[in-house]
Image 1 (tube, helix red, strand yellow):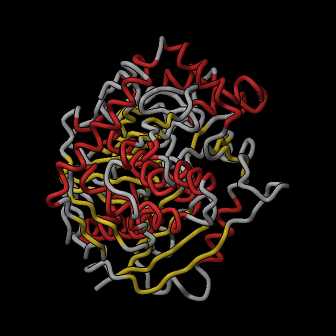
Image 2 (tube, rainbow, N blue to C red):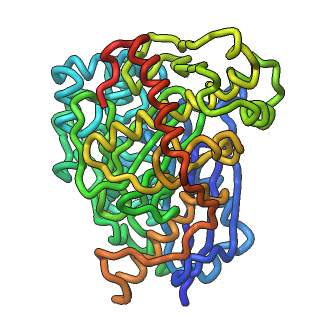
Length: 483
């Protein structure tokens, strides 16, 4: 038996899990928040990456890593760390969905010839969050800093490099690289011309190594695996495979599935990412998920989502004909950035609080079912849906989701899945280095404890609710959705 560790450096904290290499059982855990640096106390858009190292050191205190043989690193995606020729940060890292770069995203789309050209080139269309868009923003607004940029890292690349003592060899993994906007999951190669298009000159990009490869070994003999982005690490930690999809319920929503090939989607609805195992993770995002539930709760004067769920359960499937298109912040799937939500089917018998509550849940989940249909329409098999986020525990969500998704729904118990995925990657790289594991086959770890929900006899009811929703959607936005 060996011991490995996985660390997840999220936007707000560092979590570390120490796991048994054979079973994946979590033996020890550590946690530390990231320093809050913005004056208003919110999440800053510019971060000194040294703060991540300080948080890592605090989380690993008290001998947490004693006996650990290998470490895997997961970190927030879309962070851009620009370095100069000496390896020093040119400016603080740009993190998250930086709204400052929205104009730069539109500028890049036009510069390459439109959304279809980007989808063909790298499998995604530039958005404000993407590192390539942040490069364009730097070139336009901080030209002196942009001229000094010689090396580009993402958060997990930089942390791995620091753990190894800043070696000459700089690495990343295909999962992280696929989210940059200048690496193609379809070809497995960088598009350095796109870096030059955005930044105005070339920069050194880290070597993309394989899923089971080691980035290096510390002088103390601690193996460091390739690392990856949080999305890919969480998928690996959950243990999803072909036929599985993950629906994440945050303020916005996302649907991703495991697929053997990279998908090129000229509509731009699919972002073609690589996973942490050698396969692919096509992702479809909606702008409105739990925010629609919160809006409905506020409108009804309810204190929280639990109360909204309880009220919704007093209604029946179809909410007496009441339909909510939850496009409250515009929408990305379908691409309606400037639209608003729609409430349809108002009749005297439907004008009751419980029917509005039910319509909010059905509208949110129908929107996510639309996203699932985009993937299914491109040949992605979906037989099982993992439902993540605190809202997944709500009875109204669990009562509605299996029939609307047309698949078995799995609700895993809350856990640090990104950190667990990073640890699993470390165990894989360690096993390959010792000759005990095949570089093509990751270690099999015990699955997450989960609640399993089957659609049973409710599929016909779910299809009727979907048809009611799609009819309203087509009337409100004719031809807008092409799955």
